[in-house]
Amino acid sequence: MPLPIRPELAGLKPYGAPQLNVAARLNVNENPYSPPPTVVDAIASAARKAASGMNRYPDRDFLALRRDLAAYLSSESRVDHAEPRNIWAANGSNEVMLHLHQAFGGPGRTALTFAPTYSMYPEYARDTSTEWVTVDRNEDFTLDLDAAREAIAEHQPSLVIVASPNNPTGTAVSLAEVRALLDAAALVPGGCVVVVDEAYAEFRRPGVPSAATLVPAYENLAVSRTMSKAFAFAGGRLGYLLAHERLIDALRIVRLPYHLSAVTQAVARAAIAHHKALQAQVDEIRAERDDTVDWLRAQGFTVADSDANFVFFGKFEDRNRVFQGLLDQGVLIRATGPEGWLRVSIGTAEEMDMFRSALLKVTR
Ligand SMILES: *Cc1c(COP(=O)(O)O)cnc(C)c1O
Figure 1 (tube, rainbow, N blue to C red):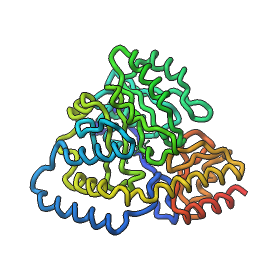
Figure 2: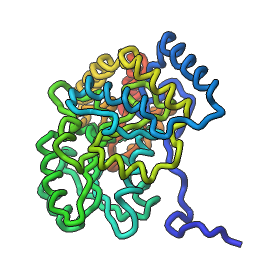
Figure 3: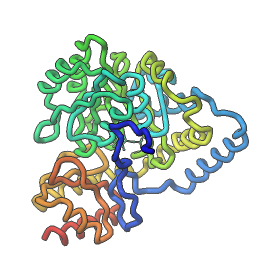
Figure 4: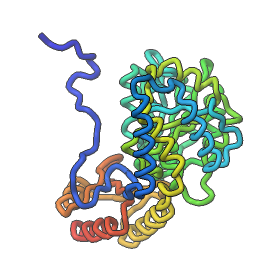
């Protein structure tokens, strides 16, 4: 007897980049530096404390964690009004995004985004039976605002999602561009939530603003962040979002009760308390990123400007050959986005050395 799987899921494979134990793992934009011993101790003792209360359900509203995240955002992005009631969190920003789709998407509704972009976006839409529409970016991966306005007017989405810095291209949007999207969204009769996915915010170049500063002015703007990248906390699974409290209230309806475990809440708080130590290498990673862009350009490759901890470069007649040639030398990167392009996450100085010499070997 066949299983009654939803027809749109039949024959699909689960999403996920390869997890291979090679010398240089530069394929999922992790922070390459493991937490320093003092932070490991703080995380371990937070987990130990949580263990003694494990017979009870955790705080469903994770208020202490929301307070800590609000304080962190206020200091990192100079947001004036980040209060705990403006913060949402879940198991990775992937789950935050799913909550957004559960609350604001659904059958008969549309989510609109800007291609090429994060490969999980169509999956949240599919899983919530939300229509998924893309607007092509310009040749240099910046937003085509005229096309965006036209598409928003045509499709009347209930969700507009823009990653900034964008994955896999590294492209950030300006506040003027976010405002233009918000202006177009304001014309959608049923209302439209604009989501700026700032998973890589901490890596942006000087002078590149965060949309978090616009949240006090727009009730329909949500800015999503994660502890997975700059925070060196991908294994902790904690993503969060800043928005007006009415928007947060809608997300509270769709979350499962106690979705953030006592351990998750405790260890995330310990990590936030040590954010300076955990992010100690962010400047180093940004410098390594800028060097990688310069080096690739000097070799004659086409490289997208990057405000993230990865670099998107090309163009290759056969990118899979280059990808495999690097992997054969122990360097795992990512073949994603438009044909001909590859994405490399910024690793340690040694890993980037390996990447450079492996790439020269494959392409010369
Ligand atoms: C890595 C990434 C995330 C983070 O996902 P988590 O679930 O928080 O680990 C979110 N958005 C984009 C665009 C990303 O590349």
